[in-house]
Length: 121
Image (cartoon, rainbow, N blue to C red; front, side, top):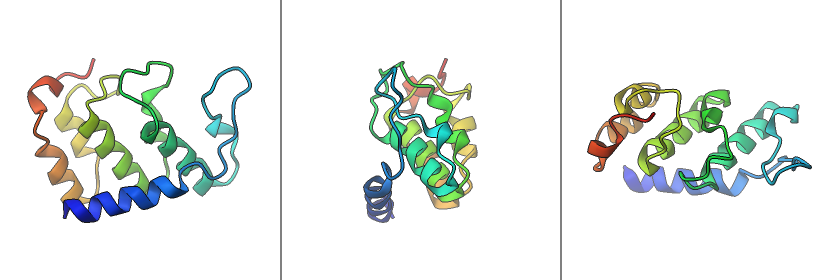
């Protein structure tokens, strides 16, 4: 199951930067301005995929702006797996429960490094 998730994430990453326009004032893509919903979702997912958890330049709540359920679920899973602390969720369980894909949700709840992720803020 994890191999399938990895393959799906790789496929999503391939298409992540389609349609992302660059903001003139920062290096952060300005995803909000993209009219096409699919391209906008990929742009938001790309922000999380291509950024480290220590980069506070980004508003990490971008996952919640993704309309496509599958991409949003993968985004939430990556956030949980990588240990982001700037989410609008107080606990890892709350974040994992936001995932609608049951196998991915269960994998999220099973993340090994849970002890230091119990509080995001």
